[in-house]
Length: 146
Ligand code: HEC
Image (cartoon, rainbow, N blue to C red; front, side, top):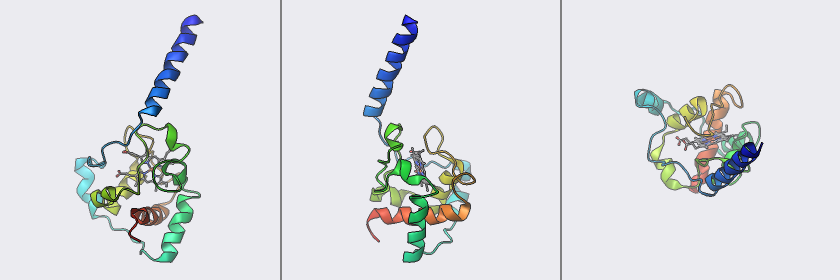
């Protein structure tokens, strides 16, 4: 029992340290595996960037898509569930990220997840393919250019 308790203590201390040092995984490393990257990049977002479509994307991001739980309402990756994740959720307010990824690569991650992170596959569970494109259209507005 003593071993169990001290084990739990070590675990909680590690979890605490882990959370304290949690950071975003290097965004310059592509998340789509090499053999699927060209196909992912070639995918085009069918949703036009109109104010109506951005509003639809926002509703999905902040609603049934559950994206805000981790990525935060601000898009900074500071949602309540994101706070316990390491690596941390993507900060969509970083303009560098938007230059590094195509919409197709973002779609691939929403469909397949990002291995070894809290970003699990969400197409088919939280959102449909179409809703994922709407969410991406909204996520793009966090770069401050819209
Ligand atoms: C349970 C927490 C969680 C939820 C819910 C979540 N995400 Fe994520 N998301 C993450 C984490 C963690 C990362 C960082 C993964 C990495 O660094 O590889 C991430 C990364 C991403 C990325 C960046 C992928 C890349 O190429 O770098 C996109 C796009 C994304 N999420 C979209 C979404 C959308 C859209 C939703 C809602 C439908 C959503 N996420 C919901 C945790 C979450």
